Image (cartoon, rainbow, N blue to C red; front, side, top):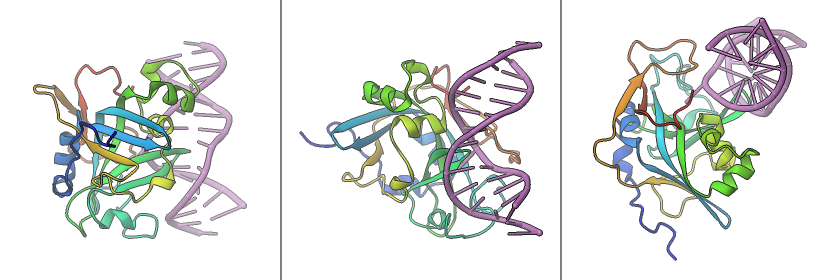
Length: 197
DNA sequence: AGGAAGATCTACT
DNA sequence: GTAGATCTTCCTA
């Protein structure tokens, strides 16, 4: 059986767009993780866009450092870091050299529910992946996966799939940031129960 | 050494 | 629904 049966993986050119555009465009896509023998999939239902200079909430705000240099690199690369003891999963976007990224905040579990429940130590499906730190734990994503290319079919994590027509997209201000921008940079699928909060 | 940070869980009013 | 404890890494002093 082929690894990517069915899903069409998004090309790198998709990620060269503006972070907010990519954040919207990722809604409804499939986040697929292959770990050892297990295959895990979730549908992306909530994202946030982050910029570089001029965005106080961005990891890139204070300039290039060893821990954030990926943000200046190739789009389509996973950027994973820890906040409050949780791993958060981002994808680098924008042109090379212009820092930007999209945080995946929530997914709807599709495949591998049993493995996710085990990872999370809970049974309630609704609570499995409805938050940025929850989904990484459910899909066993850690710093180990930092820097992997989500556009490469051989990667442990890829993003793809087609979006159903007519999904409702809403936007709001980003969650949890101490200094937000005036623009609404959080996007989510309307009435989806796996959106955080 | 001390504190903040893109969060989560538990235990309550 | 809100409050407090706690998670780990990096920043500032």
